[in-house]
Image 1: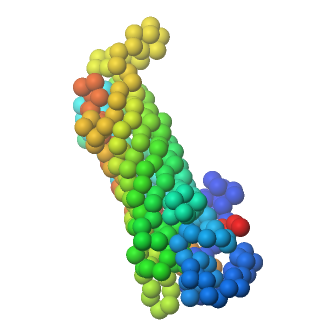
Image 2: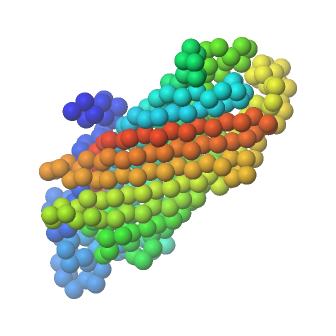
Image 3: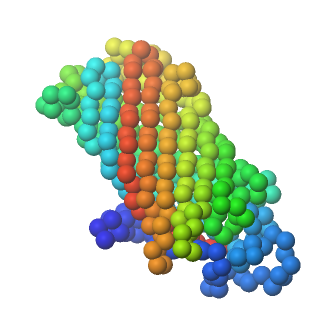
Length: 305
């Protein structure tokens, strides 16, 4: 109940629903298909298979909140690791598009996190936080549908691959770091990734597993130069390689997300695990941020003509 209250306060427009099941008709949202000989129609569903054809389209909304472990190293501020707690909130929207005859899914993702860490001797605190926004397009193979595979796909396993563009803005602060107590984080990246879903049926109930992995491919990132202060960079305007080209050679990172959708009466509970592995080596400054979070939230399918 506390999770539902928190989500409703953070996202007042969020309403909770249930994951549609095979054979369940949505007469209030979907138009009835009168042609029983339509080859694209799932015999167990009122929706056409895949993303091809007319009729209604699904929009999946998911909100999750989680807590887990954080490990941050930023040699611009300190040569020591700081470990503690990561708090994370994610808001995701997915829909099928008309690209490539309706086989491409669009995903928008907002990821916000706050980290509260301490050094090894537990006498210095570190605070970190940031927000990332991403837009991705993923091609569904073999006529699959990773947005609503329970009703739209003829197979239990579906997968899609594609590209996404993302931007990140954040900060790391240590309360005892001399003249430079904070470090700004910013990047614009092109990413490659994939999604896979598996529809697990137990006692006529559908439990949907979903896994997504993302790798930053190339882009630009902000970094102060080695030994450069922010006063020099922004006040005296002594710029020195502060915008760098990022690629896997100097920014080997990856993001993992594994979730399970659990139908509970008219609701769909989503639980999952999120791992963020961010690393960089810019201007002889080493940085890493590792987080592992247990997530919980709700899904909602909306139907539009």
